[in-house]
Length: 208
Image (cartoon, rainbow, N blue to C red):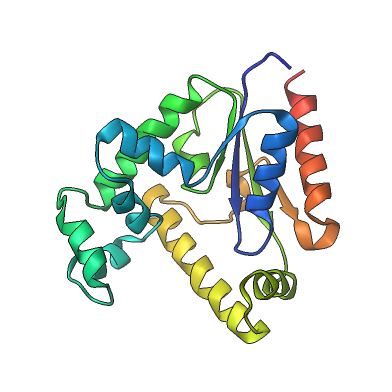
């Protein structure tokens, strides 16, 4: 396939969205950007990558708490004070500009980071959202992190809430709303490998 195309993947915690992206990257032979995007932003801005990692996907409210040192470590405060100009809006703008620059040059996959919104006007961009029922997700998280099911569920609920806060704040849309995506796929019904096959079939069909 010679035609350039872009894939964005939004996902609930534990649904296998990141695993899906990794497998698509390997099978389609294109780059995947998750945390990798933060290092690209760091490279282009000259700001240390640790600062971007600490600020990754936090809502405006969380950033305010972090800024005032509420619930943060001394190390986190030192990192934040290193560049006080890096507020939420600045970080999002920098990240979005780098994402669009990458997207203009190569076929690739972006995971999370409001990519469907940031790249909404880019040609040949296809948006997917991976969901799954709570029990399925809790079992996956518990197994991979050594947690009880109850702990895994609390982790999922808190993490999904943070992702929703971040997405809703910067896009003025609702996280997980089907209207933002080409396909919404339930991995608990068909498994991650079949999710990968469905996305590959869609991409191969659309980009002929």
